[in-house]
Structure formats: structure tokens, C-alpha cells
Image 1 (cartoon, rainbow, N blue to C red):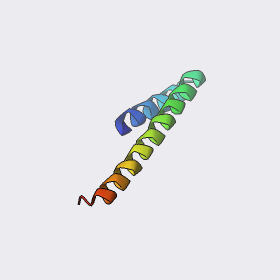
Image 2: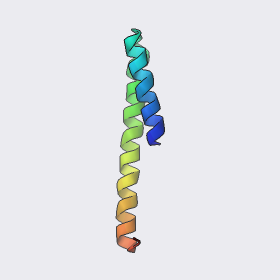
Image 3: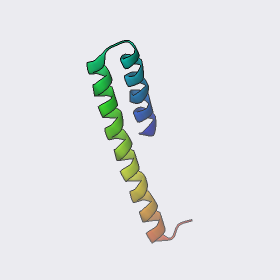
Length: 55
């Protein structure tokens, strides 16, 4: 999921450089959503592993 977020972020940067504001904005928004989903799943996984006691 993090790789998709990075991919959309790179697409947003390239689109912004070439002047495609709408595409850059959409790609940045998608990248931001994917990044926060990744963070949420990562935190949930850390908490679940701590509760179960798996090292």
C-alpha cells in the first residue's frame, strides 16, 4: 500500500512540473488517502502484535 502511495505521489509531482494541476491535485489526494490507510493498518498491526505478545 505504501508503494502505491509513493507511486501516486511521484505522478503528482511529474504532473505538477508539466502544469497539469487537476491531475496533480487528484494524484496527491489519492496518495494522501493511501498513506493514511497504510498508517492506520500499521498501527493496528502493532497493537495487535503487542496484545498477542508475539515478538
